[in-house]
Image (tube, rainbow, N blue to C red; front, side, top):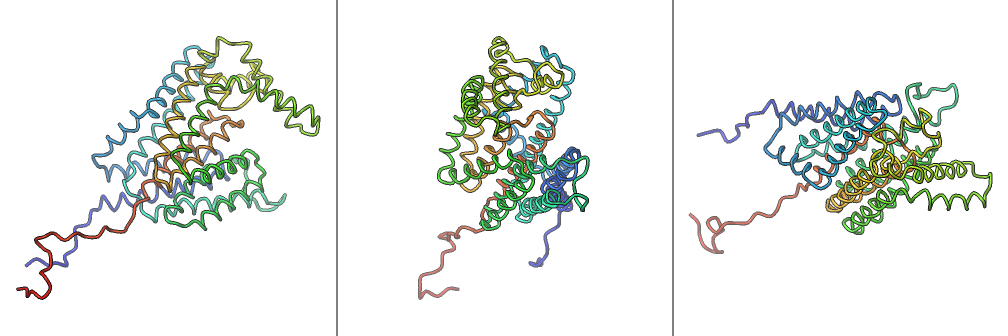
Length: 422
């Protein structure tokens, strides 16, 4: 008679995969947020290491659904529009005056996106609770490092180095906080989530990064509204962002008039308003002076390199809306509009617990991108890749451990009361 207490054979490959998965997620969830305070370049080392470990773990735990997930992602409306935008970016190298430099930038961005997509497809179908804990722990540690740097007195101990940027660290905190909040929310730890939001806000105020504070505020407002009906809010936000992309050339004329009126009222008391008014004037001049270029654009990376080379004034706007039209023209704007519209609709169909956090993430990211961050920088694209992997992990962690009640088959149903059994 076989021993009923005999243990199942252990699978060394599965054990190794679980360990590699834990280490890879620890690198992305904890080492990356902390490294943003310490160094600008550490991100480019840590992300390939973390993603590589996740890929190896996925290979050891590979299943037949891998190709199906990849195919579903790439053949969706968001996937096809994203591929179309990359293809149009590559084609724009033909008429870009900085084709060689832009080609190198495109190769790095394309490689990063490919790494993120493949790694997300290799992630297991289920995420362990212990792995979800890594994301809030990483944010808490990063907040502590940021506060120690921002509040450090001159000559006192500080984590800031010549290779680090405090503003970039705070922006990274605001971007990375939302997957951490989602990891806490799916386990009903709302108090801890609220405390982390307050801590990030304190860090942003200590370093006084206005764009990060604005992104955190708008993201929080989006989350509060999206909890009512994520699907409807996702569709509404998708339409708003798509309209902004399509009609971005009209922005400097409307906003420029508003800024001029405010400048006439407040005068020299708001120097930042004077700079913003000049930026809108330059944008409007570019639109009027080169109407043909609104069709094809100037080519990849021109919006970044033209002000550096003196081809455009230093006050040229650094906004995703301007960069899309200046680099890629109307075709790029249409592709960006379709991509944003489909992405917001997909987010709206996620579970009601996670969807508000993803919508808040998108609004925070777009706020930073629209308010002047050069979104073609590789560190920004890499950071968004980390966010995508974090949310992919969180989404796959929202399963219930409660089991449904068992149904008794007629063949094994208990005998009627009072009837003896053999």
